[in-house]
Amino acid sequence: MQNQNPDKVRCGLIGLGHFGKNYLRLLQDTDGVVLCAVANNLVEAFDIHKNLLSGIRTTTNAEDIFSDPLIDVVIIVTPPSTHYMLIEAGLKSGKHVFVEKPMVLSLAEAQKNQALVKKSGKVFMTGYQYLFNENVLYIKREIEKGTFGKILEFKSEHFQSPARSDVDIFWDAGSHPMSVFQYLFEPKKMILAEGAMTHDSASVKVKFENSPSLEITLSCFGELKIRKITIVGEKVTAVLDETQEKNKLAIIKNGKTIYPEINSKEPLRTELEHFIDCIKTGETPLSDVGFGSKITEWLEAISTKLNKQ
Image 1 (spheres, rainbow, N blue to C red):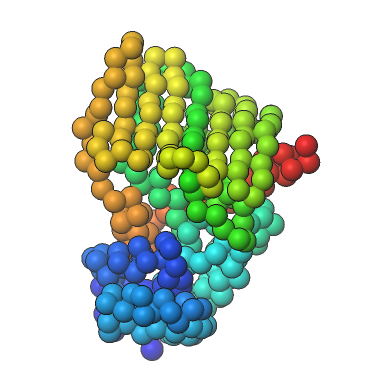
Image 2 (cartoon, rainbow, N blue to C red):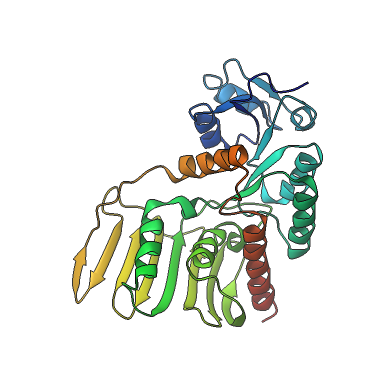
């Protein structure tokens, strides 16, 4: 059978946990999308979100989505340890695939994933929502214009991050600053990594060839919730504080601080719209399998290096 409405992309959502609920909302409020089915291994989630699930098929078995010929796309928002298995099943069933970060949990899985995507011919994207944050896009434009001069440091602080049982905080929350760093600077070769990490915290300093230094501090704990990125340039410093309701981005130059007027949009919505557009146009997503593989490579290299110290 074929999609009876080719103007609509028919989606199946796998995962209805802490973050999956955001996709449940957005998939029903995005032009050109029909949410056909939702899979979650715990049936209790369907009761919690029953108002948003009216008229949508629910199942505790993801295979019901993979085997449905009317579903074009699978959105995977499940624990990271399940990602590779579900990506493989989705691609082999002929679906386009979107998966939340981290893409997979090893470079070996990333390389197998690249081969699967190439063979399938389907659109694949990893959800690094900071790449669709209007403040980050503003910073990128200013860097390209030369506003910052030479970039000296990139610092990220992330406190009060939800703990995961199947993956440590560096692979989970560290994916965000690594994706922004990769997007802005495209580092080529790691020459130094130092610091310390546990399952619930990490303090990492990394140097790359031809890129600024990278510093990431992560913790499941802390008195205050912190989501901050600081980019220090020779001419300008930018501080992006996502906990602020307004004036999230501060630009500091010659001791003076300005707050650019930025038309803020919900990054997750913009990210999802980008994915759907790529399916319709055949364009390559910004965070395609190659981008996700590079992030995986750096996460594995840094964590391996520090865990040996």
